[in-house]
Image (cartoon, rainbow over all chains, first blue to last red):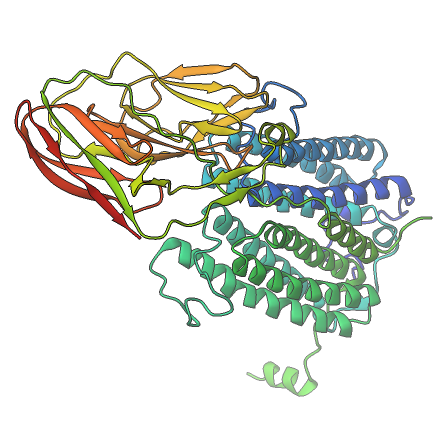
Length: 332
Length: 256
């Protein structure tokens, strides 16, 4: 049976028989949107870290104005709204551009889905202000931000020269594809836990580090302690996943995957240090906000590794069973 | 030049983010510049007895904390010498800004028609502690040439957050309809601003002024438990019995 070079790639994203020409400006636009989204996540983190989430009590205007005085908490909250509007415009332009120029239906659909996500994200941001930061809305706002970031990273990669070139022929003998996908899922779960911890005020529920109340496992008698501890415990799973990803990436034979795996591992180690600093400094603004943005960066890195591994490596071919085993199976 | 390697772009993005972190990073300031406390507006009472005394403080008064107001140049201009946060205000052994009230009161007491005012002036709240009856109108004023949001965080009453972007704005409403002691009030624009509101279903309460003295008038004869609540210190209480026309005496002491 001939090998399917694009195995695992959804139909709408497959490179057509005559591959579309690389459009450098649309690719750069997508990359700029992804970077702007990362900056937006950082600014969103600043809003929460500085306690400025309700510094502007109205929405969509700010104190009835388009541009209020940028003082105190307004600087962070209205600055976040301005950055979000910028990302919204970048996404809108990209969606229209892609509709006009993109041959792959899946990419066109993803671009419009990203635009829908950024609109919903804006509505969630407005709702959380108008309803005084209800936890489910704030958590949904935080999680959708990460999901949108993943969509934009996917769009950037789908329009890159690497994706548009012929799919990689190298077999995934190291098993990068499953571990990259698993690491991405692990990190996303960790970000959900982090958002719940942050928006329920559980960030300092366990005041010490690396131990928790002087022990390895604290008494999980209250929800804030349980949520905080779950975030710490799951960090161990994330670290294990990215260690495996880095090792397999190195063994994959693809330099891009090896470097990306290493970068993600370094990022996770920095994240652990930032998480510790956030606790030990009593949630000082700088380490706490960097921890939020760092989480998004780790997720983006793992997601990119997943996309790359599925593009550059073909699935491992099933091993042919030894002849003796085939013979044994054939016997009645 | 085209950028081809997604991982290089990713690293570039991280550098951008980390670079951005080196810029302005404002720590949230501590709460509240202190202001003189003001007694609640008197309400209709029926008795002729009263209880008076002092709220005393024994111990070391912590030093005042400096508050940075640089987040808003207008606040800085209004406070050229800076602001100081001192939550424990002691004069001649008496503690100011303590809500003193009668705990065991029965009967229905309609809310007074007069409003209680909370002013935002000099990027501080005046008074720092407000006591009022449930259903009484609270007038919130902005006397500053800068914007404020008023954001009480009650646990029993309904939370709200309103903006007053211009000097001279006023909002009047019976915001609180249930008893609650004490509701923190803050401005998310200026995190150092902090005030407290105590809400009662009766009129037998007062906020101590300088020196810690208090007097609760209009009580019917009876035995009363008097409680003193401070924004930072644990509540203290004592009992006093008064007859019609009598003035009972009770001093309560905070020990640090």
